[in-house]
Structures are given as structure tokens and as C-alpha cells.
Length: 141
Image (cartoon, rainbow, N blue to C red):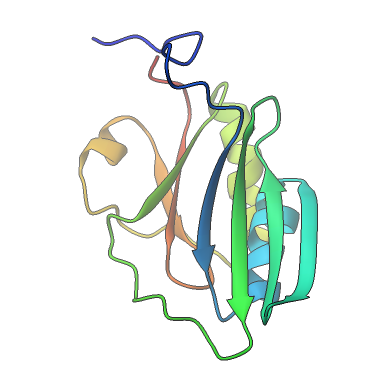
């Protein structure tokens, strides 16, 4: 088993990490991640060189997600069943709070491509663009 380092390796002094992707459904994607899943909106921009966007924080970390939409549409190809955002929870109850919000918003679990996820009690959902979010009841490290 590997362990998670407490600090970045020397020579790689990274202050923040942003994972960004385009969408043609910015409002729906923001609602899914912010209102349903519960990630806080930490920033947004409009008409920046034709782009609108929203940034969602991953609390307690220097990491965040960004979703952008261009006035001319998204060049993004369709996701595969293995394009995953994996969120690890501190126990089943906390994970199922989010599962309940997803169900109330009309989102049902979809089968995971990789059987590993079912084996650890995870549930997989699709966002409005078809990208997958895996909810796992406990951290692996």
C-alpha cells in the first residue's frame, strides 16, 4: 500500500490544483455540483474572452473544480464511463446524505464500469453532461 505524502515533493512547490473542463450546460452543472452535491462556489466569471465559468471549492484543500462555457459551444468530447471525479467520505451516513439529495433532485445511481467501486460500497452518478461522480463511503488512505 502507498501512503499520501503530507507535503509536495521538493522541486514541485505547487500552491493550488484546479481541475477544469468545458460544458454546454453551465447552469445545470453548477446546480448539480453546488446545490445538489454541496460544493461551495468560490468564484465565477462572465464573458472573459467569450468564456463564462464557475469555480467550486473542495473545502480544506488548495484544490478546486472549474467548469467553463464558451459562447461558440464546447469542444469537449463525450465522456467515457471511466471519466471519474471520486469523492471519499468520512463514513456511510455522510455519503448517504449526498445520495439522498441526488435522489431528491432526480439523479439515480448508474452502474460503474469498474467493479472495484461496487466492491468498496461506492455509488456512481452522472452529472448533466454525462461525466461520472463516484461517492465512496470511506477514504482509502
